[in-house]
Image (cartoon, rainbow, N blue to C red; front, side, top):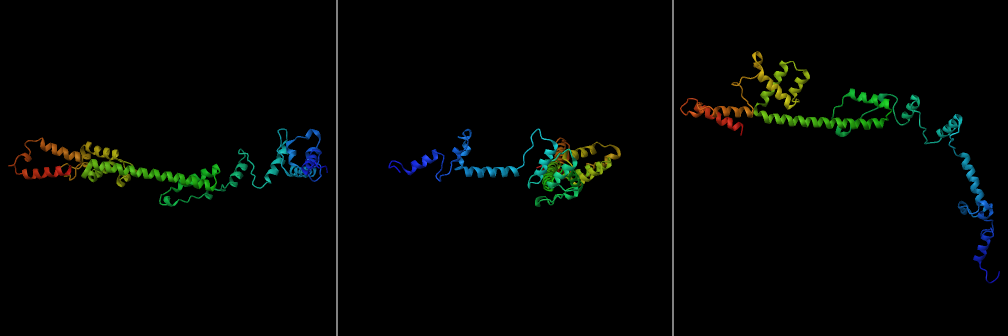
Length: 294
């Protein structure tokens, strides 16, 4: 070897001459001229590795599934779908216009065969909330028709019941606020006036559900006031529904203020006549009336 040549120079010369370090022909120089400069060939050190890659590629192509093109016929497509169906984890999209295919598809996702295959188990916070069995049965039938899985039905049912419970709680809260407002308006006469309202409902043939609601305290403030006001308008036999003013023991704050106003507006009332035999009783009544609206 001439003194001016080095192993590196020899290596470069071998590569330039078409050989690699092992003396084998380099893949990038062994291929035809038209393929030289192809970037993908740079990964192969020699013709042998290129050949091995080609053989592996052909084996892969032999086991792969080719997607039929636009010109493929029905038989080719059926063969393609048949091969796909054999691949684990691959699910073919059904023809949803075909009832049998769509039913099979939904069942593969967890839909039961019958509506009673669904189950609703309330969460801990909803276990005491009463759910209508007929309504649950209706949702089961609807879920089956739509192909819902058991878990989907359970989740949707939980959301529905949760919304129902929240609505019921809000309604109860509103009723409590209305009752409290009516008690404020009617004061000590609340119980007495509610009895009158109930009597009016019964006497006028109100639906049984309304009567039960009044008795349970589940009717609104405006309805109760309307029923009571109705009693004050009755004449004849209906007037018995309204307690006689003299026999009543409880009055609303407005009624008490009205009594005070009547007394103060009557100069001849015993309240103003110290010599009247009822003067003392009138004074005590005025003190009591003032106390009840204080």
